[in-house]
Length: 250
Length: 280
Ligand code: HEM
Ligand code: HEM
Ligand code: SF4
Image (tube, rainbow over all chains, first blue to last red; front, side):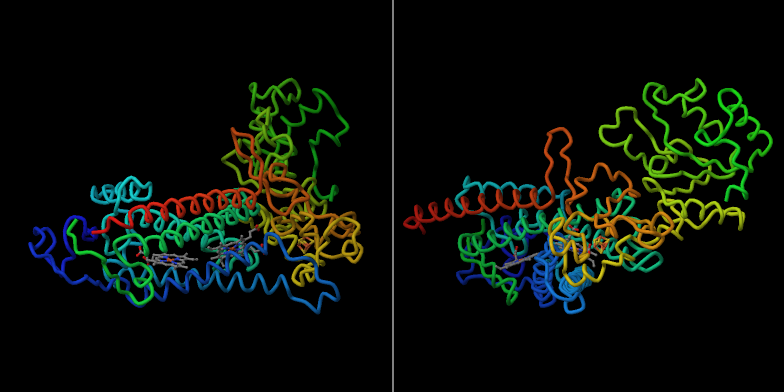
């Protein structure tokens, strides 16, 4: 992967990376196509499935008040669980699809799955970004893809956390499907590994709160960046194009 | 059952006592070397060199290891032998240790439950006598024929669970109508055992049928997973003394982060207002 920070130079189609910024840096505002359609589609399907998973998951842990009448007249918990499992499948299949797209998509499609701890530029960018959030720097760097701070959260919550939720989720699902089901053969080992079914429920449930905290931070910082940073945000994930507000090289 | 097996040594049932009793063990070990089944009740405490449990003047763990050496297979009777149970509950002062963490070189069949169901116990032995092999075991070493499904999968109150009809508190309308005990902390959804099919005392009843949730007595560490009357387990903060469930912890974290976000937004707006004038 190439360096996505524009701090060191203008985007490659404006000037070759590494070369000194042109004296008369383009006066027009730069617009870059960042997130391809599958990435954008996945983003919103994924966001929706997580919303459904959190609501229904919470209601599985703390069910709604009791319904009166005959049991045969209702299927409340059954429906809630069905929605959870359906959204769980969508989440998992979406995850796989997104991972495959990372292989064939553009370089920004790969960022989500990488945590480039070996790159000094990543840590430098991260430091600047942290300072920008701590109000210690008047303005952030420019990034075509994710900024390094966002990338840290996306990798650890969305990729690692997502895998954890898929693993524990399908392990719990295997308990209903029974020994020998594919869910059991693939994920059943997770139950004894985490110390029993009750523990898996508890960790899966805690995972939900990690996602909720991530979404709070994510949505806030996206809106804030959209207003205050040097590049557009919401357009990047809706129509794919990111616009930079200034043409300063650094 | 007892007419089919030769129960040579059982510390609670046998007639002989003292040295005579211990001598039988040695006799079994030589006479049926490699051909006897060792069924263990309880578990050895390992702290203080095993001195918390002494049999015939020697630590239980020594006796266990000695007799296990020439056994054909080992059965861990009950949650004590299988998982540690109450004496291994936090903080486990005697370091009570389940059999499979002491004996490594023999097939071990776990028959957990506190106590295990009599029909399940005899079923396991009958199978071994009839087919001369150990029953098929699951990942945790429990016979699949009795432990492959959860209480919840076979519970006669399950239709109320799916419908969304729960006992909200003991003795309410729902309790009298026999609604699902999920909200009363029933551990049926996380417990593998045969209670809801075999039942107890010749099939008379079982806890859920009697109106009380399952406490999960055949699961590993069931003493340490929070209240028997709460659906969500307590998460025990080791070292800082906090017990809270996942929702309390999560809500606190979300609250802190939400507050921080609001504060951050306010400061951001202020800064922006301050610098409005000095844009280039
Ligand atoms: C459950 C809710 C959400 C989740 C889990 C989520 C997750 C993610 C993830 C994983 C990415 C990285 C995309 C990739 O690299 O493939 C991303 C990017 C993005 N999301 Fe969300 N998102 C959620 C809701 C939202 C909402 C409500 C908005 C709009 C306000 C939004 C706006 C964005 C934007 C603008 C980006 C691009 C960020 C950048 O360029 O660095 N997201 N989101
Ligand atoms: C971000 C993703 C997810 C979130 C936030 C989430 C949330 C939750 C929550 C809060 C619970 C209740 C846990 C409890 O206290 O017992 C739960 C249960 C469960 N989840 Fe998820 N989940 C997610 C993904 C998945 C996936 C991918 C699957 C796989 C199909 C799945 C399957 C299950 C199952 C089988 C249960 C247990 C249902 C029951 O006990 O009746 N979950 N989930
Ligand atoms: S009473 Fe317990 S085991 Fe039975 S359906 Fe309800 S939660 Fe499941």
